[in-house]
Image 1 (cartoon, rainbow over the protein chains, first blue to last red):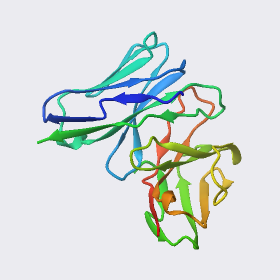
Image 2 (tube, chains in turn orange, green; image 1 turned 135 degrees about the horizontal axis):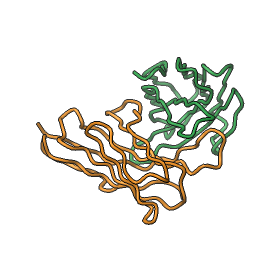
Image 3 (cartoon, chains in turn red, brown; image 1 turned 60 degrees about the horizontal axis):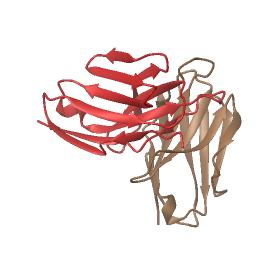
Image 4 (tube, rainbow over the protein chains, first blue to last red; image 1 turned 180 degrees about the horizontal axis):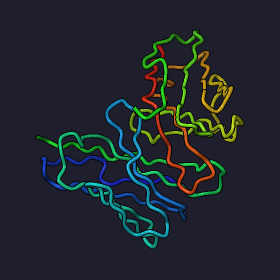
Length: 113
Length: 114
């Protein structure tokens, strides 16, 4: 399966702490993307990292990619209560004309004020 | 929101009803998607339309019937649903021909089948 598997399934931290979520996958990829979903809402694209990249930053987000280990991590620094959401990694393994994404089950992040 | 709208936001229907979900994107994208999100399951891709042509149907039961009249609009026609079809149905769009294929999601329709 190309599906990404997130770890941990749930994470609970205090405001100001860092949150780290991991994603593992099984196939070669074109890129890996991270999305956020607030409860019962649509997903919001956060950041994309290509297979030839090792690290990317966007504001308080830092994503790393290790293609040899087939894993990625998402770090949220100085977390805020508003970061409370589910976070999903999505694999783009190529092979389609439209960029098929396969999503994992997600990590539920709770940030306590 | 992200430029992708979905209506209705909530829908309760009986197993014998017929209803339709609507999705519209205002982003100039050419690919549109239907996903099903059930509790404790990964997001399931149901259908993909690329330039109005259906390019993927992931073994979805025939009680779900998609329609894509143009690149901006996508419908999901529902009939004779089962209680296990209760879920959040998400529409997304993307621009193909790029190297990234980021997808933009609507807020979803929460469907309850009674």
